[in-house]
Image (cartoon, rainbow, N blue to C red; front, side, top):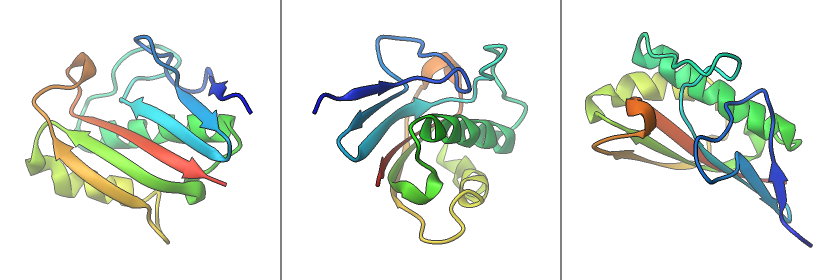
Length: 126
């Protein structure tokens, strides 16, 4: 079975040579999402809480386009510019995984696309 490229206008268009997500069999690999408004292309960066919610909404849109939801997510990777923001990001992120949260790692990095403060990717299965 060939891999299926997932694309939705409900999430930001890729800003490079990658797909929003790829469905391989029953596994969905969602590319890292940043806090871009899918309608305007503008950054949502008033504060780290709003940035994190924008990222999670973009992830949700891509998951939904492939027929998945947060309950299907088995792994997330969070990239952040400052580990000092970990608690705030974790609080916002946790609102999307109230029960049975996925496996996860959080990594501090020196820089992210468009100089955002947080980027999150995920893997989901059915």
